[in-house]
Image (cartoon, rainbow, N blue to C red; front, side, top):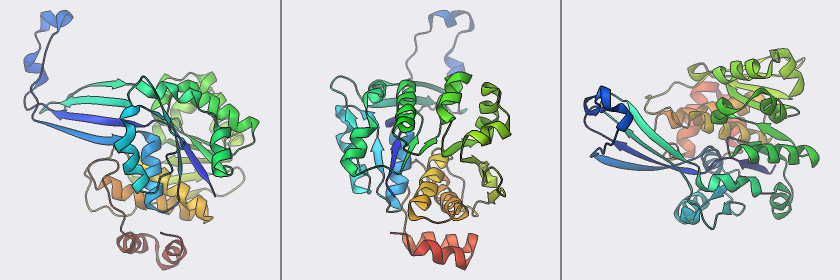
Length: 324
């Protein structure tokens, strides 16, 4: 099963200020703020929802196709993804813009001042999925993740017109979308991904009930944080999968992307929805125990030991035969 993942490709530049922002602000001069903070350290991390999902799928050996736009500064990031089993040949490289970038400074009270540079992500709307499909010999599923809004709309419409199954996954972009955009992006999706808060927001903005939305998508996959995930289908029993026990809760960033990577890998292997969700929850647990979205290492024996402990020997035996 050939899966393409569309969405953002970005780097995060994270800095730490040892003082407090509040101590540097003058109440009656906020309209003329001009400040510079001397920071202690700079941590540069790879990110972007599509790249994070593809990294996880690559770790599981399912050879995902990354579809997005980046700048000429993407070479090192591309090499990293290539080494970890991701097909990056369909990434569009902008001739004028840098790869999208999030720059954030955090003070000792965990307050943050950040900026997001869209950069080359704005050119994702120029990517045609037919070109991608022709290159790889066809696509069985396209996940349409958070990206340039015009790109998300174009990819969705192209999937419909070419009858390519697609998964709708708005994540960070849902806050800026109106009801019409959300209705357009989810109608006819084979899978609709969201967390619990996004689930409520989708229903509020579209004006559709849970039942109406479920009738317009094949599967509704809702992540529940530490409680795992729920999968709903019309006329079928609800599937609920719990999370494995975590060794530590280090950093929740990228956990949702990791779940999707595991779930999509399970689909590519042809396992059941319950099993795919278990794989997703196991991979998400590895990410929450690690600082950074692509800093974890998937060791087959370690993964299977923990998977067996969480879900039992029969489930593990089924997954083990597929795990690269």
